[in-house]
Amino acid sequence: MSKIIILGGAGGIGQVATKTVLASNKFDEVVIADLNIDELKRLEKELDNPTIRPMEINANESLTEVIKDFDLVVNCIGPFYKYGPKILKEAIEAKVTYVDVCDDLDATERQLKLSDLAKENEVCAVIGLGNSPGLANLLAKYAADYLFDEIEVVDIMHIHGGESFEGHAVIKHRIHAMVNDVPVFDNGEFLSVRLLEESGSKYVEDCEFKDVGVYPVYPYPHPETITLPKVFPSLRRVTNRGVVFPLEYFQFTMETVRKGLSQASDLTDLDADIETWTNEILSSRSSFLESNRISSPKGCLKVVTKGQKNSKNYEYIFSVSSTSEGAGAGTGIPAGIGAIILNQKEFRKFGVFPPEAIIDPVQALSIASDIIPKMNVSVGNSKGTMPVNIVEIDPDGNVTEIEI
Image (cartoon, rainbow, N blue to C red; front, side, top):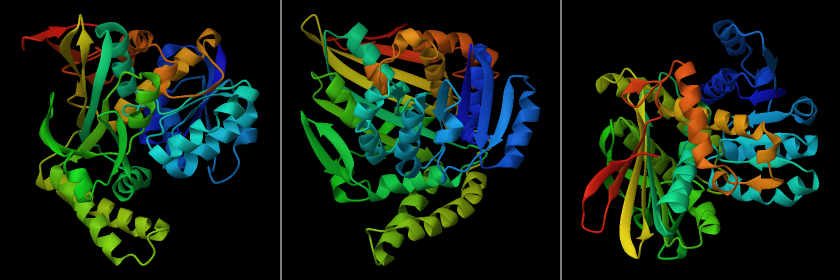
């Protein structure tokens, strides 16, 4: 048994991560730390668990002294391009095992550069253990380790929407994805495209998402495109593309950013502009949900993998979907499961790692199948299941559903 602190524990993702670790009964003390003291008190009352302790924190201040008294820290404070490297460095200095849900490429690159420092301090840190990145990486690893002799293609696509709340950090991450280079690993080479520019348009395509529908997906600068090729050298293509519904809301976000960029005086410093764009986007969100009659969340992660098995071309398509849960559950559950795994010292290595370099996907999915029924969340089409749907397409085009 040990002590864990969930940073950003009162947020949409942090609350789910908190509930996930609580359901494991593996921790003597679970501290939910956040700037929002009112939400902390409400969550403490809702969970009504003697192992919980709320703590008010400010991520703009040093958290090293706060973190050092714990065995594990789960960081859910965004946007990660601002807070990810800072808090990871503080956890390393505090010599505490670390998990986060970082989904910003630039932050991931800076975090990976802290690996030597983590080794020196004998710290195990796993970054990007959410939905995408996170679960997407683990499904790709499962395909590489168990389904192919040689994996060649990983195309990651994701959609969510309809959540009752979206915070500023979520919108800022979305804007960040639109104004920065998006890495694409195509034909064995790294390319840079922009979501809002012509270079990114060739990667936009309609995707059929299980339990959600058909939507266009756009290039996202999520870090799987740079981490997966390093772990699996046989890969020739890795892409990450996503969208948010209702589509009109996502399109309004793109147009707000386009308009803002055309009016910005200094493209190297957009902090103040992004704050303005964020407020404009969030103020419009409810009207888009209402006009599209969307009153509950849903989402889907789809990972298309291709490669060689018995010297023949095979394709395996993974879909993880929910008709009543959105980004919070999809991201918070994997983070919590990562903490449960790393609570066992035998599964730790020293350094900073993407999920596919250290987490066993079979172990993670096994824990998920045990934890989810205890959490009162709905995944797939029924409560209490781990909805990893896998379709095999053989060399003759025959389609078969298979199980892990």
